[in-house]
Length: 123
Image (cartoon, rainbow, N blue to C red):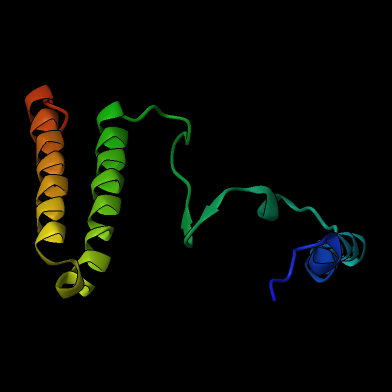
């Protein structure tokens, strides 16, 4: 016998979402109301890892820094896809091996394109 999904089946999930959202709102309001409100000069200065701030925090960074960071994240996420493939290597057989070679070839082409464009060269 097949059971059909009705709105009543989703009631516990909706109730749990409302309880979670209510908890967040109540916690934020209560901490705002009962929390300390003393603002001193020492509390208003920027603080980073116990080291006093030096200079302007709004100085521009080279776009190369951000480009390298984005490329790292891109290729790092792509490598994550290789782990499930390696775990299930025997189940996939030859077709899985061919698909992984295509995937890695695509990654290699992307990396060669990045090298040709000079994205990893610092001036």
